[in-house]
Amino acid sequence: MIKKIGVSLILCVFVFHLVITALYLTPFNPVKAKYSFAVNAYMEPLFSQNWRLFAPNPASTNNQFMVRAQFADGGTSDWLDLTTFMIDKNQANRFTPYNRLVRIQRGAFTSLYQTDEVTLKISQKIEEKNLDREDYDHLLENERTQKKDEYAQEALNRYAQSYVRSVYPEKDIEKTQIIMQETKAVPFSEKDNEQYEREQQLHEFKWVDFVEVSPVFD
Image (cartoon, rainbow, N blue to C red; front, side, top):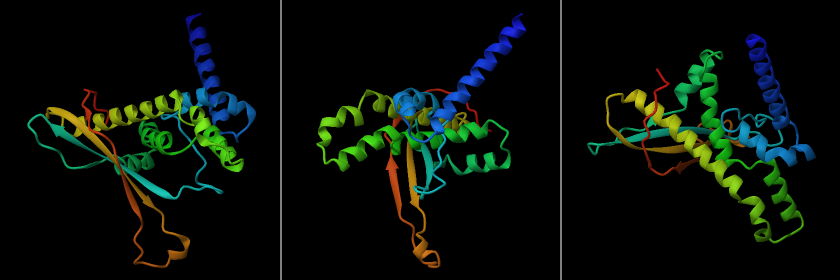
């Protein structure tokens, strides 16, 4: 009896996750518009996915997160690359927890720097009809969007602090800080120009107090 209940619960969770994922990935439609806030809250950042590999708006930047630590003795660590080694581990073996862990960074970037479809549609309508943007601030910037950003930053900080702890297991860590380096792709018109320097931009996050977390990285 207990086994049947357990199987039924797992099946329900699987079906729920499948339905939410399908709704999350479908093109913009009335159903998605109505439930987008709840769907995005469930999917991001851990299950975040997108189709930005394809036209009309393909991804055009490489994003690299780095973290440094401030110790109780006043010292500060070098910048640690959070991104490259995780991508390498994920590509080496897709069937490991790294496949999900690497999504935390991508999901956080999506939550913080990419506009969801509902907000994007509202912005487009405002521009098309030349409306006063201030009248729609409650839709574009609201408690939900603020909480989404806060959750993304918290998840990113916990992720980074877990890595810092694994690198410095014996250190007394007080604070950590993250930066994101955004590097634009080489334009097609410059593809043969070996001297072309790609545009880079740094996004600096605030220092945050260290919260003791279990290291999940080897």
